[in-house]
Length: 177
Image (cartoon, rainbow, N blue to C red):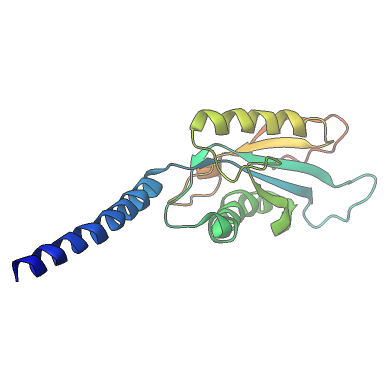
């Protein structure tokens, strides 16, 4: 009987060791902070005015600040669940109220610009890549705006604070009046 109990105890210990390593690995993954920024390529025009040589479309990029990815939203659904609704409410709607329309498609929304990295492990890495994305876009014939991405309450431009950071002199620029 003692041998059986000793044998069962030994087996339970051997089973428990790999399980505890798995738990440790899962908790380590949850502690990983993922940093990213958003780049949105848009076309802008005056609301209610037909595009023409006198009123051409403006090509514009919006590039967000660097933020931590929310833990409750996986990367593959972040654009649809958080970014598009946020951008629509805090950037597009206020601009439209001021007489300009901003158009883009889901494919025009990119996490971390043209980089192949889904997310960055440090804020510094993400900031450096954001800076590179802005420099790259300066050569792409368009105006560049920054905007603040803040998860939580959405208060329009008070939250997003869109701001022109690069003006391409060859492009139209439809500032919201």
